[in-house]
Image (cartoon, rainbow, N blue to C red; front, side, top):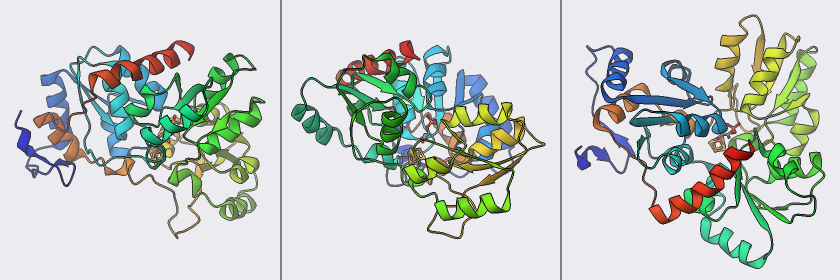
Length: 326
Ligand code: 13P
Ligand code: SF4
C-alpha cells in the first residue's frame, strides 16, 4: 500500500469519498474482500457503533482481538486500544481510522516518568489500567480494565505492595472498596473528571425516581452520590437488569446508544460537564472516527498501528496475565 497516502499532520487519509456510492455498503464490501473485522468501543459515534462487527468495552475489545481469525482488525476507539490489539495479534494488520485519537489518561503517564517511579519503589507489583501506552504496559506486571480491576486486585495477596496507575480516581475507588493501600499514580481522564456534581444534584431533583450510574474514573464526590459505580459494561448490564425506568448517566454519553437499543422503553439522561452548556460529555478523541475515515483506512490499509517487538513482548505478558485473571 502507498506509504504517502497518510496525511501525517492530520493523522488520517484525507481522500474524498465518491458521494455517488453508499458508504455503508462500501465498508461492508471492503471488510468482506479483505477479511477485515471492525471492532468499536461504546464511546464511538452512533453510526460507527452501528456498522461495527463487534462492539465492546476495553476488556471485550482485547478479548475479541485475541480470538478473531480476520486478517485485518480495524479498531474504532483510541490508539491504546489499537496497540492492545496489535500486542496480542502481532501477525495481523491492525488499523485505526485516525492516529490523533489519543487519550488524556494515557498521556498523564509517560513511560520514562513511570520507570523512575518504579525504581524509587522496589518490591512493588505494578498494576496498570489498560488506558496506557505500549511502553507503559511493558513496565507493568498486570494490566486491568475498569471491568476486572476489583477482581484482579482482590486476587492478589493482602500484603502485596502495589503501584497502581495511571487513574487516581479508579485507584482511590479500588483502595476504598477492596480495603487496599495501593500507591497511586496521579493521572486522570479529562472527560470523566469533568462531571458536575451540582448538575447531577439538579438532575436528581428533577428526576426523583432516577438512578445515578457512574464510571469509576469520575471524581470521588460524583461516585459518592451514585447508586451504582461500574465500568462501561457494568453500567450497560446494570440498566438491563434494573426495574427502574430512568437513569442519570455519568460516563461518556456514547454508551447511551447501546442502552437505548437494548431498553427502548427506558429513559437516559446524560450528565453534562461542569464547564460548558453542552447537554452531554463526549470524549473528543473517541469522536474523531467518521465513516469516511473508516472507509479510507480499509481501502488503503492505513493508518497502521506498529509496536516495536521488544516492547510488544514485554507488554503482551501484562495483558495476557489480565486475560487469564479476568
Ligand atoms: P472501559 O471501556 O474499560 O469502561 O473504559 C472506559 C474508558 O475510558 C475507555 O477509554
Ligand atoms: Fe481516554 Fe477518557 Fe477518552 Fe477514555 S474517555 S479514551 S480515558 S480521554
